[in-house]
Image 1 (tube, rainbow, N blue to C red):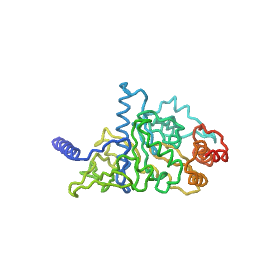
Image 2: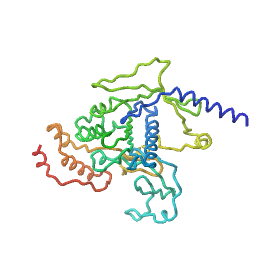
Image 3: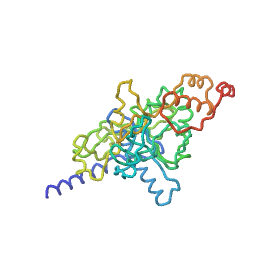
Image 4: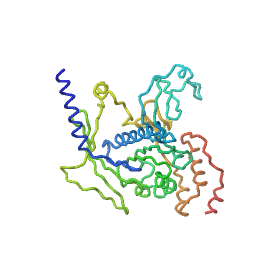
Length: 352
């Protein structure tokens, strides 16, 4: 009994010492975390995004906010521990187009996992339609965009949706939604300039390590972008700022309920692992049971659209939606019906 008390005291003391010394992230409307593989970008982005989401939901619950905030992400984030599915729901298990029972259904933030008989509460999928304003995002919502360079890299400077819609979305995000956007990428310069200059602060992570068995520590450098110049905060090597927190065991998972009784798996650090398949396999684009996904946030990539944008300098909304609609019909994931008007391409171009 004595050693258990001693262990608890040591645990609390170490946590307090490092937590007090750790750097505090300034939660601006748009925050970006960058760093190499395995440096904790997504882990920290998920932590900050969930904290703000829970805080905003609390303000909604006590009546300060009139509209219920949501959290939108491009990788699945667990909002709470799954609950056992009621039998009356499980017994209504629908059939797919081949007449076989489906493994899961998605209804907003709730996934009916028929295979494991669980109800899973997950973040809402961030889709291109949100960026194009086809779908409305509730006020005070939180967005998490993991690996934004996958669709808005420095090589997408000629993409009209990136240069017009995504840039406008981030520029006016505080006015329209007044929430938070958390962005991750492996390198600051990888993000297209039109988006990069809209980000309030970058936090570059390096040297992620497990500390005292139960915690993690990662060095952080604060960076600001102004006039296309990247300014890095200069600090002494011995006094380098760091971020700190608890780190559940990756392999000894049976110990987690003992040492982390109030914690649960919020996301899968290898969420995209199911995409490593032979290219002949058909791949879907949705959340999967658990925290795996084969969904990648992407934008239309038609060459003629980019050429027209480079020639004219802009594209009318109707024409962008036409390209978007054509892109979806060429084997992309099924979406709800978009309010896309039928337009004549030549007529739209002549109106420029």
